[in-house]
Image (cartoon, rainbow, N blue to C red):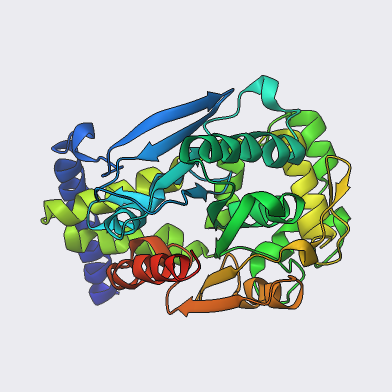
Length: 359
C-alpha cells in the first residue's frame, strides 16, 4: 500500500501545482489580449438582430461579383476571421474577392417565432439584394458554412436567378447517414420520439445555447472535456499559445440561443424527416427542389468531420441539377477547417481560383 499511497500523493500534488500554475498564468492575461476578428470591416446593412458587414478590401480593384458568407445559426461567425494568420476572410481578400458576411446576432425572447422562411426568404434574400444594389451585379456568389450551407442550398433552389456560384463548406445534406453521433442525438435514427422538440419549444421558447453546446461537447466527451484541458499544462508558459487556446474557448462557449420555431423546423424537417433530399421541405409556401440548383457548385468537406460526416456532404452531387459540380476534401475535422494553418494556406486560393474561373 505504501508505494500506491506515494503515487497517489504525487498525483494530487502535481494536480494542485498544475492548477495553481494555470490560475496564475490565466489571471495575468487581460480580456483585451484574447481578441478575435483580425480584419477591418464596416456595417452596411442592419435588420432586427442581424448585421451585414463588408470586409475592407486589400486590393485596389476587387472582383466584381461580391461574395456573401452565410454562417451557421448555432455558433458565432468570427471563426472565419479568428486571427490574422488563421483567417479565411483575410485569405479571400488577399486574392481579390469582395467579401461580405451575415452576423446573425443573438436571438431575443421575442424572436422565438422566427421561422426558416424568415431567415431564407427574409434576411438572406434582403442581404443578397443589398449586395446586388451596391455592386450593380444581377447575381452574387455565396460561401455557406455548416448549417448556413443547408440554408443556402434552400436559398439557391428558391432564388437561382440571384446566385452566380455556390460554395458550400462542411454542410449537411443527407441527414440520415449512418455516420455521425449528431444524427442519432437529433433523433433521425430512432424516430421523432427520441427528442420531443415540440415540448422543448413550447416550454422554453428559444432553445438555450448552453443546451446546444453541451450536446456538441458530449459527442466527444473525453477529447473535448478532458483531454484538451490536460494538454493545457504543456502551454502554460507560452503566452501566444495560451491566448490562442483561450480564443478558441471563447468561440466554443459563445453559443447564441436558437429561435424556437426555426430550431423546431430544422430538427423535424431536416434531421428527423430528411426532407431536403426528398424535395419535401417547404419554405414560404414553396417546395425546395435541389434540382433547381443549376449554377456551379463547389462542395468543400472535412475528411475527419465528426459533426457533419463527409458522406452527408458528398450526397449533394446526386441531388443538385448543376452540370458544374466540384468536390474538395481536406484531411481535418470540422473545426480544423478554420484553425489548421495548412488548410488556411490551401483553402482560400482553392475557393478564389474556382470562383474566378467561373466569372
